[in-house]
Image 1: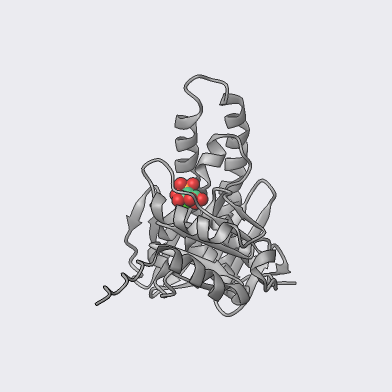
Image 2: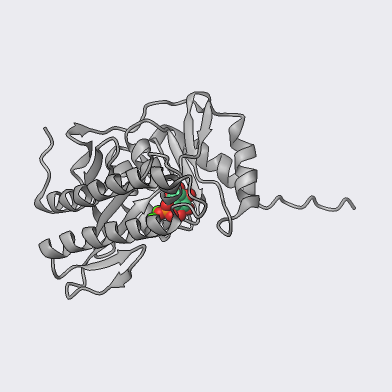
Length: 274
Ligand code: IPD
Ligand code: CA
Ligand code: CA
């Protein structure tokens, strides 16, 4: 059975507390679907409440650490080495529409490196967690990325640009290059869970552009600790900036990177004939 460190227990306690509140609020949201205005304001309040709960729990246990949070932004800590990176509700659009696929994502960064990560899906009570060098787990079960080696067998997750967000041209070119070669592409709407599912071998790969550190900080550690590879789509290592991310099992990361990168590479202009 996996033994969680003290800091991971702090993170799990915070996520489970906020998760219970989110599940209660999710029940309310289902009732509000039919109202004309819809549950948007209620969901924003649920999101902020979950973030406050996570922040208070983490602060109580580690008062000196700083924060980077989706709703509350940056809080400087007196300890300049450690920072929590928090998305209190990843998959907001699913939550708003009564779709039970959302999560809380918490990562701990030390001197610029993610050393612990947790993604909690409260509806199914699935706690994905990892510590640097100690492996990745789902509840008490050790995680390994999938062993699928052929593109034809692969199920790949992605994010589709939406209203005011993302680069549709790039996405369409990448989709066109990849879709005919794999067994399926999914857009489930919560990047932290897309990464957790790659770590768990449910998806064989995941790519998306223009994410934020709080969407991916915990999930990338899950993938690498489960034996997968993570990079930018260009192959560079700066994926935590969120410009683009590609995560996959080690057998498919290279082939996926080639297809996605080449799909948007400027074509060489043919030399004029003399
Ligand atoms: C979003 C989800 C989604 C991704 C978006 C994110 P939010 O986060 O992770 O899958 O495609 O780009 O903004 O807004 O639900 O926390
Ligand atoms: Ca998010
Ligand atoms: Ca969010």
